[in-house]
Image 1 (cartoon, rainbow, N blue to C red):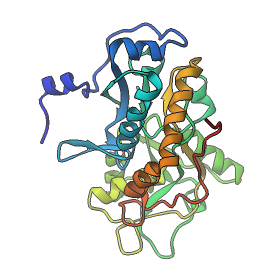
Image 2 (image 1 turned 180 degrees about the vertical axis):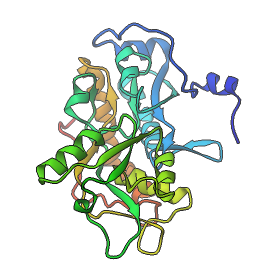
Image 3 (image 1 turned 90 degrees about the vertical axis):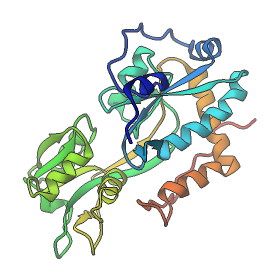
Image 4 (image 1 turned 30 degrees about the horizontal axis):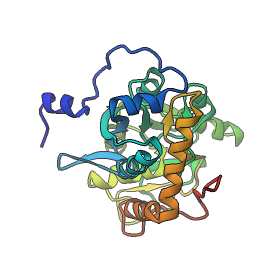
Length: 291
């Protein structure tokens, strides 16, 4: 079921071009939220299992994390706040934080030096690795098998530079990259044999393929190369030069960890019974300061 455009606008969920806004004044995010009573969050809505629509409802790991964070932020801000979502894409998830269109952004955004030149990030709240999805073959394929092959990639993904750097470091011919507007389109092209593989964070490509009906694994039509060519750490994007705001976002995340709520949310989306099992392993989100 699709919501009418007017309803989406009222809820702040329509991903149209934002009205022109001035860049946020450094260090004033908390004051703006208190004055307006709203926490405006840019959220991805086309990338399972982080943020996507299921039966018309916005669901996902990022969605659950930010709802839990927002509840704790009220204590640190000192006043009640309402949560408003605005749909962001890979192209707008950074720029809308820069412009002040949103107070924070959660859209499976990998923390990179290039992105840190434009916005700041919270401590990592998710971890993954980038690999290549391919049509099942025997024996299983490794990354080296894709040297010089045509690989699909999501437009504006950080994977573009990372996959080229990996193949060059191994002395292999880099794959030829073909861009797609979304993960679903790239995976359909893979299934239709238009490309040799599709790449991004493993959780994204596995979940998108699985939810679209294409099982990933030995008994399905698709598999993922066992080796990752790059690690990924997902952070909440926040405006630059506002350490007070970044700090309390981190405090809220640490509160989730200490209470056990973070682990419950993580298990829901990445536990053994999830669409995309991804063990937490040694990753931790323990407080960097006490009290």
